[in-house]
Image 1: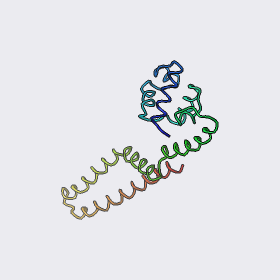
Image 2: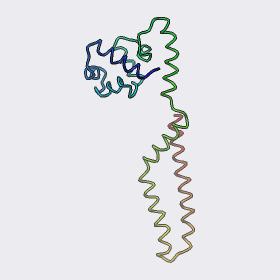
Image 3: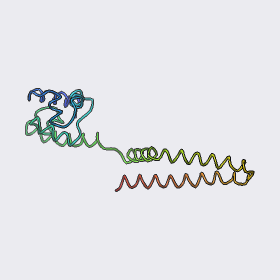
Image 4: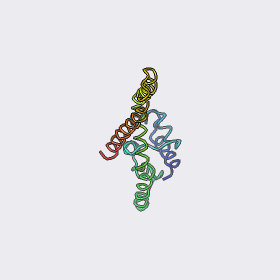
Length: 164
């Protein structure tokens, strides 16, 4: 699958149908900038958009992905190639998805981490203010327990997102 060839083919078909980028975008529910990005090979339309685009431009999804009109024989050959190419380029590995959900969970819980940090600082300082130095030993223990709890919460969230 050649993204540049596909983009040029979309532009060619759009012009054949006497459509501006704006007009095609309106029919598909996207902006003219999005159509421009497809045509300039900045990125590919997603699967759902490929179906709408092929219908609007009167070609098959396979021809869009191939970036050319296909004969029956070429059509069958390109179909398999295009399915493999699309699945390779659009699929994320399990590790990439895990990393994404971990990052998302951490971002959503930033305020919690700030609060916990402040509590740990207070727990480290207050024993000296109230002359209870034996409480200083509880700070690392408290931090370790809280880290374990939050890490467990994050992993439960990640597993839920990955396997639900």
